Length: 216
Ligand code: G3P
Image (cartoon, rainbow, N blue to C red):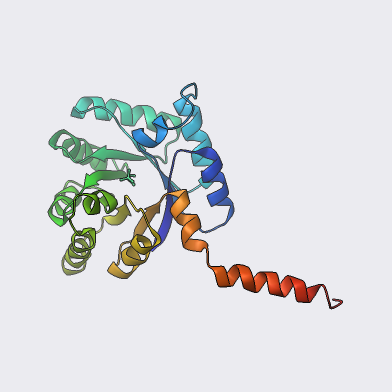
């Protein structure tokens, strides 16, 4: 399972990318809205993309097909390898079909069920983003939705890549990998939490202390 960072914060993204295990970045309007309001979005997106060098999903904000396609073309004029992130609404699916027929990668977002993911895949989505945390927030077990999706993918041999999104805890990350998601897009804080172990820290401290006693 590949790991993406789910953020629009350049510092976080640069640090995550510097560690060498991040294959992409996903953004959304809510993440972008957390950044300095004077920031030029195009410049920020380009810096984000340069920092990670791999997959970069940029979300459209129109709710009609034509508007989404116009935005997609604008984003692609910034950098042609962009993945266009599109909400799971009927107008969005039509945009996905259009982009897919033109060979442009799409990431269908705001998916909460395996059926939605299956429909998005049939519209030609390159990536389907299933939200975990937001399902758990409303008392629905997100793992069941993800396991159903992965089971359908195995049974049907579908090409779209499953992205587990709305990851809130290290346990989510573990569950996504076990279920068979292709990618998990993980907030910076959860990445750092997932790396942390007290025995790693204590072990390093002891090694460094002992290293000071020997000459290399
Ligand atoms: O990329 C979308 C998704 O990861 C959002 O997460 O925590 O706002 O539900 P969250």
